[in-house]
Image (cartoon, rainbow, N blue to C red; front, side, top):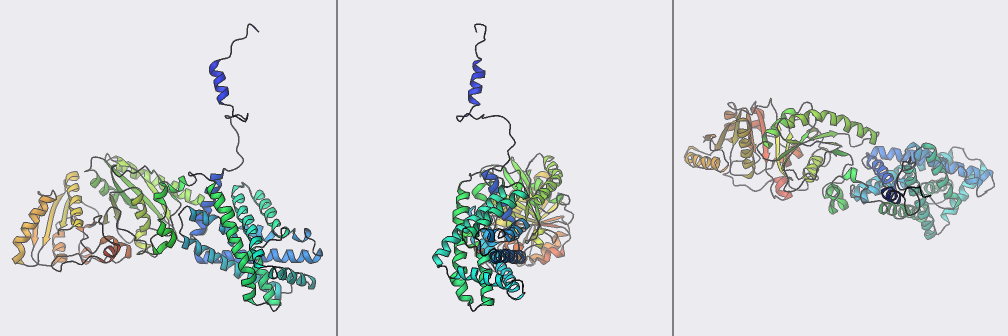
Length: 613
């Protein structure tokens, strides 16, 4: 004993730290065989993203298939009840089969939708009207399928006489139950169904899912509970074979069950499971937390107040964007391989700043009704996009600028660009403008209602025709938008030595002297005192621009008062002069505190002031 060495203090301390209070080791390696609560929640949200963005046709027919599958449950329950003389356990053994078909087959069942879409709604990623739309379409599909199934059972000769009598008896039992009792029993059934969804997403294999679904739905008949789609099918069967009226069946039977299932699923499971998860549950989807969520008015009123949905999939190097941080240029691109000129122009403009970041955003537009688009496919799209963006990052780094990149997978276009600009506190958005861009071809989704605020930053739109920045023409008036055009021209003059020409159009030769005085002062105020100055006294702005553009390679025009952004969104931007010239055109709109009405319809302007056409 005397020869034993004293314990190493460091080793003793380490062992104490590595032992939990319960005696279990605090460190070590284990193979975790279940998902954490946060992971289950994120899996549910990923699935809800697919459901909430599915089209009405897709939802309805998936719901119809689920409603018809419920007929299997009704058929087997009735048949076993008749053959076992109403044995309370044996008659229910095959009751869950229809639900197994639905859940494992991925059909849309209303009571399942009390969990996934509600999770998105609680996160304020989906508006209440969007949730209601999903619920109504799925429920109508379920009822349509149940009606078809009930008709087949009533008139198809499927039931034996004893089974037909058992079917009527089962249906009558529900009709004769008091509404308040129906509600309470249905609430428990709603809890079970929504709980099945939660546990199903926690399972790792199909066998586990089948066992969970079977045991859970077996408890519905054993507990004498009510499921709305089964109850509806029973009610319709009674309407077909007895003198029961639809009104009596809906109001006295199906209605209380529907309300109970909904409240049971939403309150007893969704809300409870939502609040047991941590604040990090959607960190990978939301990035910037509240900045990515719908506003309270959007959450309540959806598209009537702005956005109705925030896409779940949006990935990239999202650094915290401070209000006093670097000058940030967002560049939405549809094809990273072919839009290098747009990125190049953004780099030339940003290079004038001491501290600037150029942030290309690859917008991958998908159909609004995406159907089979799974989360795994989104991940593959993003991986491929990141590889394509590598060349863009190198291009930006060659200019000595910091580069960030993102990929957005969404059925929206302009709306996504606005969201990124707001989230990243962008100073400038530079967008390509031609018929090949997704924001030029995909405007069917609420273009004007989505334009719920002024542009979050300065906005440039490039019509690229073999971009050449050597000779720049800037038409001028006294406006904030033309001031932005002057800033861009000055940046190009500084970065690549562009020769700048300023053009001012007056109504008549008598106003030429005043025009020259204005243009000289305007050039000095905007740091372009070295520019060539041209005053045109023809009074025709478009003709003047077309004439001077023949000697220049790029025209930078301010949007003046009518608003560039609103017309790009609404696809009403028609500038005849652009079609008359051969060089590239860059249209500019300054961030301003205009009202929505002013941004969409323009301000009242002085008739003597030239405006863009």
